[in-house]
Length: 144
Image (tube, rainbow, N blue to C red; front, top):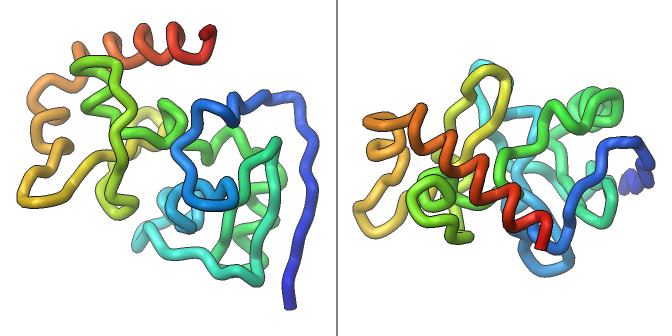
């Protein structure tokens, strides 16, 4: 069974700046709610797909889809789903490994983790400074 729900809420996503796969699929198809669960993250399933402000999100089950619908802004990753470390280091949009993440103060941060280089390690060494810089770079990006 395929669930497609169009959600129109006041929180505005800058979809042109998002890290998406073919067809505007966010988070490489991972369930955004699952990042906040103890065992997370989990891949979503095509049968639990919704579109939110031009982006498509998949969920592992109907329950998570409904949780997201109630408060999508809570589950959206920082910096449009791009690597938080790269954003803080240079303001670059760098792809992520959807299973390399960190939740800080209720916000989801994603990281590059390929070819033996895990940027989460470097992020953890200087998180406060990198987060402050990433926030500044991201504001410039979404205003452009």
